[in-house]
Length: 304
Image 1 (cartoon, rainbow, N blue to C red):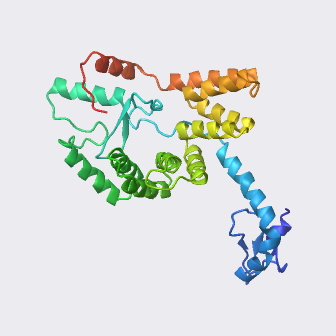
Image 2: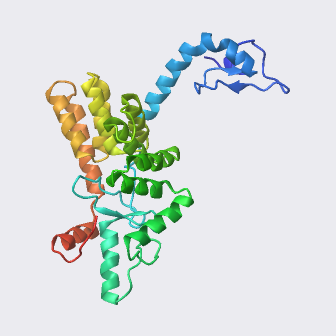
Image 3: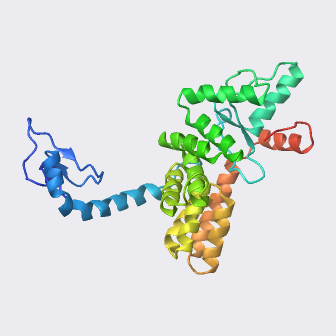
């Protein structure tokens, strides 16, 4: 494609002048322009193959571009939040402001309030802490009315744990439409397991890709597994490297397996190992270490 190609209608060849405006292909390929819907429809069959190839290239460009960091930072200390595990998130979601705050900042605030004899308040927005689950839910619903995707996702997870998969699907879908990476990941799980929807492998992968583009490490890890299961080891390797670079230990282990099986080089694994350690170190702080000790010693009782 040349610059001249974008200055003329791909169907009739008329050039863009003051009274003739050209619009790009509605497929999103950025390869051609048209002077009218009629010209685009006439040219559709001829252009369809090139359009699909271009879209695949653009999709891979977005998919394999590594985000600057994981999908969330603590809004108080501004350090990356540790990647959640099955045992702990090492952070808390505030229903009043939908901010996820690391344990270091949250527990430091709790200890400060106790020592000063103050009533509990959110460490970020300073709203009084909800006294009951019902009050917390009301705050979440208030934020949902303001179209907050984090609150939508939070309410979706609540319904999911209650096995109300249909309502969970509605909340996740609304949040995902607003670009929320975690909600895309949750939708991928629903479509993979067939919870509230029919099982759909294609939609599972689509939502995993959207979540991965948004920086969600678990989604990236799962995509790596999908590619490895299908024998596309080069793509699997790229996914695992990006996830490991964000600090995902499971992806680092999968990359090590690819290295052992000859599908990744020593340099691939060594580079990912260094980046993984750097990402993990970036989540550490003295405050978070003190918080972990406080929870471990029973000084602070947390309800995750």
